[in-house]
Image 1 (cartoon, rainbow over the protein chains, first blue to last red):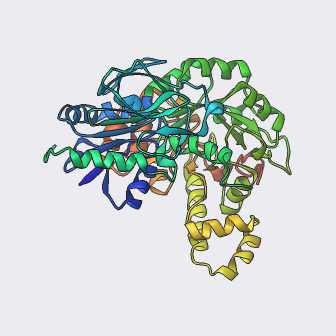
Image 2: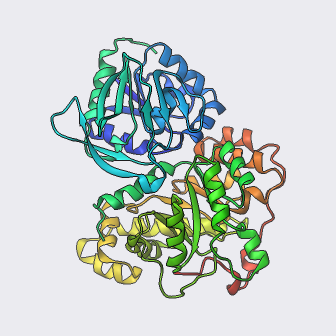
Length: 194
Length: 295
């Protein structure tokens, strides 16, 4: 099993550090050809508008879209979640339209509102560390979306089909709960060739 | 100095998000829109780009808060702004304005020739320039959450940026070879706090992201600095002092991401028009150098 990490811009190395610690094979994805042999994709934090520009420049946007259609598992954190949400507002921008949710960019405010907190996660009995950086917020969730983690009652990590979206940065904490859960999703997705 | 504190981690967290992107100097809303549309990961709001500061002389200060606010209201990417070295009151105003990052910058005229701002006392993260490891660690000790090598701003000449990045990385490599009993002497020579010197020796890198600035004028310059170890680049005068800012801004973004793919950089490097005018650093007098301000 090999995980691809979108490595155009942002904190992709932080995701790589987590996978390395978990002893999982990974490779950086910068072009459509880099997707060969990849079984699941991580879209990291960064600037979603920058990532979009870079994705559209070399056909990677379409290549990821195709993989999503085929059911490849994706894990998006912060900017990565913005790329995967169906609708993006504040301001509006296009997306890979994989998860039936609306996402509000910079929903808590600017950097002064960035913070570390803890939330509730259905995968754990202990509190989940949440690292918010200019974080977005999920609104208008489709009924079949599973809420994986909440912060003060608001959903901050959700799942639909094989896509996992978090508005925070588990890759910047020591808690690998969500990465382990995503790896399990990839293992369960028994499609041999993407 | 508590590098495990949540406040510190939240500051460095934003710096982590900017890695691999291009931070572009802009002086008005129109330029900010061009930068965002080209794929900049952040903009630096300032009154004049470094090349113009150099030309006009006089005292260069923090930009007008109104211009900064207009830019913040227009673009969705992070907005940075510059304060003069040691001018903590300018920094307080920028924090009240809620910019996302403050650059305590040698490009502006220093307000204090002895001391930098105590950046630990702010909630907004700071970036500071350096020419070598000692300078980088002194700024980190003061609370900088991101370091950029200084280069020579507004020169359009990459030679100083290369010198500073090579120096920094060589000094980091050297520390990794030391035995435990050699760190005190190393800290003395670097003029830097022992704890930070030890940390760098054990980890082989700075405890904060390390970007490059000062003289980046072409996509090839950006790729060069990335290959020399810069986690991303600041582009000051290089974009809006060139013939075709839109095309150049886009090319810089592509070259910074695909820095190890010359074919891709070649494709975006054609038809860019003229780059900004460049300066021979050796023809500048000591007083004209910006990099020696605030060591």
